Image 1: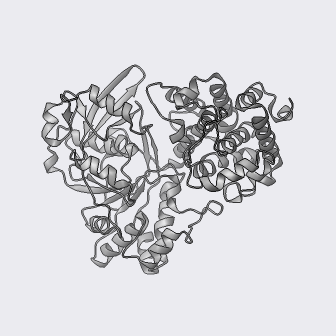
Image 2: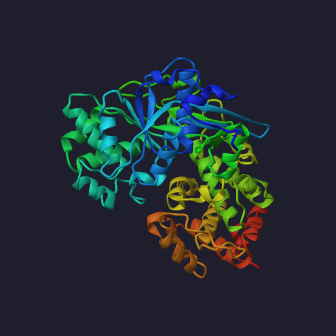
Image 3: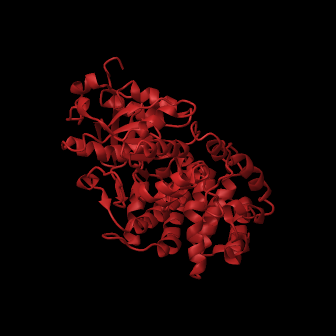
Length: 499
């Protein structure tokens, strides 16, 4: 390990892999990105890096930011290596690496977020982007409206100059810019939410309206909130990933592994300009919704099809789930019979071809994407990804058998114990509330659907509720694999409770 090269500006010339060819000392900031996780660095930061490699966008460098105390650990790691990141691409047939350098600083994380507000107030910043997870936008799960009652937002409305949230900081920075006579920046969500730009607009404008209606109107009129669709699997970093960096001779405390696939589709609505991301593979489209629907329903909902079954059966990775005959067959049948029918084609891709692509990507054994990571935050991901498909299938009078089984597998997982008796550690912001309901649903499955904050009125839908209750009863009685076999063979819920 002593022969490893510690990643830094000073050591770039010693690396034997692709690295920044541009002079990083010439970079100036144009973007603040809030939520600097692995996905951001494997995706948005990579696109910008590719432009910089071509001598473009040198005035669009990224300033990293966070608003929670746990972001401080990532900040320390990245600042120690000059905000450089080693990206390791895990193609099934090849492993390659490169170092990207499009991020140049990471703001201090302090109470009140003053450094973040000051940086965003700088007119040089023309885009504020974020990856804060699907559950981070303060959306009422039933109405889908702005949840002004959340304690974080109550705080930000009461203390707008010392906000707790990223959105409060955005509002505060836009207030400063407006007072100084500067225009607004573009707010760019890179999270897996359908209509993520519209949702971000709702959160920012609604929060501003609680304290300054005139500012809210100015933001709503002059700022832009493009919708976007993002896609690249970038697993969490652990000992295996650190060891991979070492195989390339690099000591990188924040290495990122990723699959050999990226997609970024964006509405071209940027009030203060943008980098030419389309020159390096991004797609600008007026119909982001169609791309979003295909990706969120087939990939993101598909993740939930796999992960909850995998957790119940003690399968640690998504590729491991795809290697399990029962889970893989379940995945394929649900996708083709119940999910793909709700998806329209996009230029160059049909729903059927996209299902085939996702099966190949998920089966990549080099991608160590854990079922635990994918199953995290089910209370946001099931209402966001799976249940809209259920509603569309019901409205069209089509089967929801497989989707009801997906929900039953999640309910079983939330009991907190796998079929082999091992504990499932808390894995949801609402875990303490979910576990007792899931346990009680063992004898009365309908109790699970009674969580109106998650399911709304779906408990009243007989095709869905009857199928769910039958599947959950069978899972508790005979086990997950028995339920999967029953579904795959086509017996479905009509015999689901039979022995």
